[in-house]
Length: 184
Image (cartoon, rainbow, N blue to C red):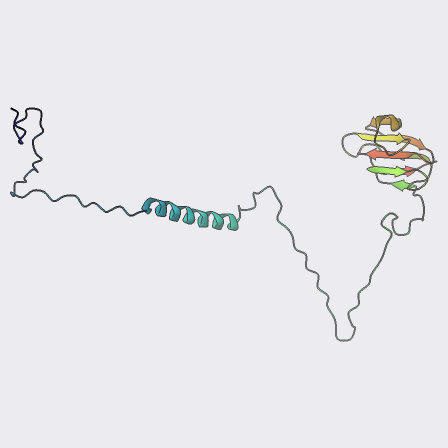
């Protein structure tokens, strides 16, 4: 018969015996805080909120002007009034197509960027440009404004001066050129 009482089995572990300090008493157990439910989640949440607040504060402070987007400028206009002369306001209305003092109807000078209908936007005739306004000056005479390749009557890329004769009903397209002026 086998005796199962403590200390009689060769494979059994002896019962736990705390060490005894030289004072004769067992050492005090280390202090263990009881786990609070959600304690780690709460700590992580507080850390996240503090980090967010700090990040927003840094973002609001700006980056010292090194950002790629320009900061908006504010213009303030003041109207002053003297006691002897009341303040007045003047409104000038101009035609957005024609410059003030320019003749009405089709123009004889125009920008080096755009598409113009000959006979309506610009007068028929021969026009000259001083050349490219940077890289290349592209111009095209077009039979319509469809944007299709087969609409091109004639075109060119140039860096120097160019002369082009356009006829009523054609479209004239220009990109990257100096202003065009009618010379004939």
